Amino acid sequence: AAIDPVWRPPASAGPARNEGMQGLELGKLADIVYQHRVAVVHFQFEYSLYSLPELESGLNMLHNGLHTIIVTLHDLDLAGARWNRLLFSYADTLIVHSEAVREVALRLGVPPAKVSVVPMGCPALEPPPREEARKKLGLPGDEVAIGFLGFLEPHKGVKELVLAAKMLRDGRYPGIKLFLFSSTGGSNSSREF
Image (tube, rainbow, N blue to C red; front, side, top):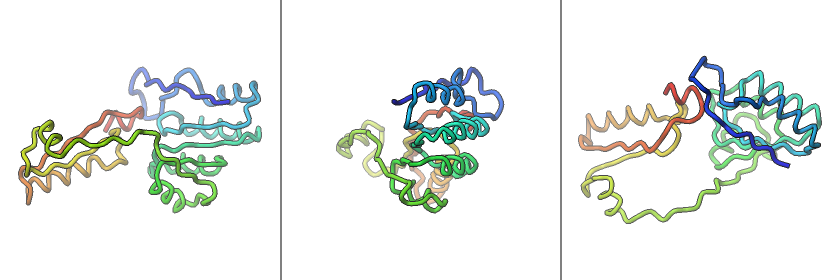
């Protein structure tokens, strides 16, 4: 059985506590798991969904019930060290989407047999011809451009990318263009960023 709680943004940005899960605490989720005798619990983990005490309590309840716990980490935020330690200690299996994230997990002490790489299920898209793409972006043929595609989260280096682009603009590439194809994620840190 699979239980996939629906993420809804909080009514207001509120305090720094992660407030993404509304109306379905992890403890209630554990109760549902017990009621339905679910043997395997799979978390699509996102840092903004659970407060640290809620995550610890819920994982502890599931662990004590001898459930198999699988966690998919879509991202590995080193600033979330306390969340990471909990996930690493309670999860029977961690699923990550790239070899790079797997390597980080291994460096943080996760045993290799516990981490599996499952690439994102996004279809590979054939990029348009270079000239066509540059025309759509309003770029002359020789103008340098860099870009970012993803949620605006502090740990993704967007601020550093903007500063680097400014340095390049002030130096060797005065006409450089920076494209940010993004939106805010579900966390308070993303909205504040």
